[in-house]
Length: 149
Image (cartoon, rainbow, N blue to C red):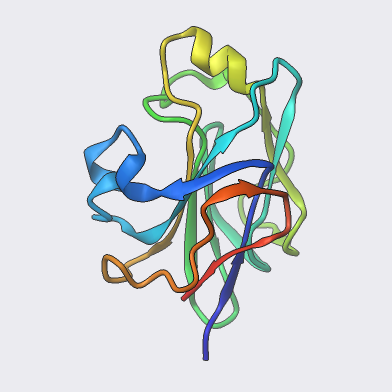
């Protein structure tokens, strides 16, 4: 049985190999797709890509585990650890969320102004490299099926 992973924000879907971080680009954490957010100073909301429980929530990242045990990691921007002022949490660790529920808001251009990538890897943890099926590339809207595992 496959699990559909939904796009957590609007932007441009791209292979993880294009993410400027060796851990994500080599799919060491797991398979998936990254989204380059739109060019905006507006607050962008990152939503849950699956229904499940938030097992980890940081200003820059979230891990949601589905009922079936599928764990999805969202990492908002690259090298954004330790920059909590860039993000606003919209959920709480331990909470149950439905796909599409708000998790984190941020301004993609505020991240870019620091010289960092605003890319958002969306990774199914502990999956083999290349195991993301039917992965989208190009323009994507929140809630689109990004890929399935």
